[in-house]
Image (cartoon, rainbow over all chains, first blue to last red; front, side):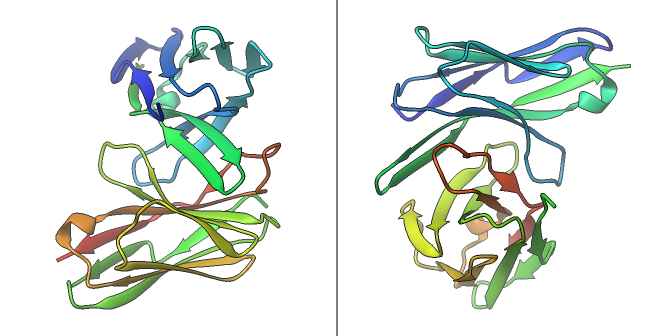
Length: 114
Length: 114
C-alpha cells in the first residue's frame, strides 16, 4: 500500500519532443505528489508538485496531470532539451500524527537526443 | 537561499572507523531528513527530525546514529559500518508542515565502506 510505481524505466526522446513519465500509487491517504530531477552525483531537485484537489499544474515546460480516481499522476516535459537528460523521480507523501511517509518511485532515466 | 549543504562530499572508511556526516540549512526549516540512495535506485528515507526531535526512524540499524544539535544542523554518526552501507547519503529539509512539504536536498555525501 505504500508503493509508488513509476514507468517507463528509461526513455529516449528527440530534442523538441514531449517526454511523458507516469506514476501510480495505492494509498489514498497520500496528499502531496512532487516530481524531482536528479543529475549524476547530485541530490534530487524539486521540479513541480501537486495536491489531490487539483487535476493539472503547469510550470514552464513542465506539467503534472493528476487523476485522483485512478490514483495516477504523470509528468509531461514539453519541448524536451538535451539539458533535460537526467533521472526523474515521482514521490508521494503523507503527514500524520507521529507518522510521515515520503515514498519515491523507482525512477526514469531520460535521454534527450540533440 | 534555498541551499542545503553537506560535508564531506566523499568519505572512505573502514568497518572499524567512526565518522560523521554533516548537513546544514539556513532556510528556517523545522524538518530535516536523512536518506540513503544506492546507485540507480530512489532515495530511501532513514530519519526525520521535526522541531529538533527525532520523529521518524525507519528501522535503521543502530550503527547509524542521527543527531540534531540545533534547528540548522543535522549530523549522522557512523560506526562499524558494513560494505553494503556504501551509498550516497542525502540530507534534506522542509518547512515541516502538511501545507509546505517541499523537500530541498543537499548534494549528498558519497560514502564508501571498505
